[in-house]
Length: 257
Image (cartoon, rainbow, N blue to C red; front, side, top):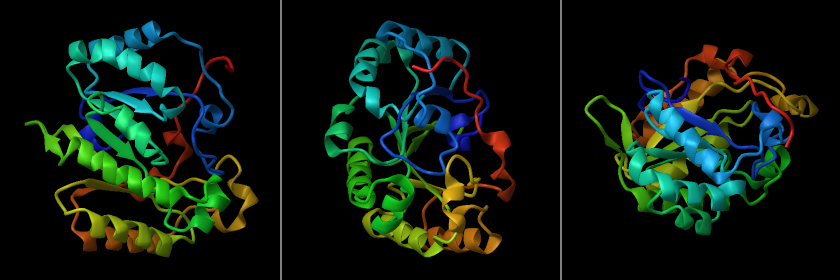
């Protein structure tokens, strides 16, 4: 229920979390599965069954969270199930995707939900272990938008197709945020993508190794980032400041893979 309103709606998004991640964010809230590989082994047929079970429960969409390490298997499962699912498929990722990865999912993904975390290669290398993050993510997001086109909604305001770019505001990095958002403004018209500015940053995992980000963002920092997004004129979403709580971190269960 905690995604953007056009993704979660009234019934919730059918979220499937995958272990492993292409990034090594020192502040990851999902570190138990992204870094420590907690999870279950499942077959492609079992994954297909999960999709249909989520649809049966009333999910508005199938929401694949960080599926990149398993995309060949995910692709095969979707190829078998998508015609019968008849609800949108969302790829919810860190944005650190090769162009070939985006191409590989053409025709199977309805909604791309990528992060655009950083502009600075110094920051992305320091905090996420990926000095080429902006180059890779910016190219991927442009390709995602070309693939699925402008946002399309149903009569209830649920997103059926399009790109929704998330940006998590981080402590001390408000000017880096501004540059990342300005890139979006320079490369997309205001009706070509949606943008979501997030204030939920809570220092977890190894954030304490970097004192400058070992705190929540200030109201001033968040308003600065919001103002940058508003100048670009995009439609989208912003979070309440009370979203920066550990209560919003999903509980992960299961044996280590």
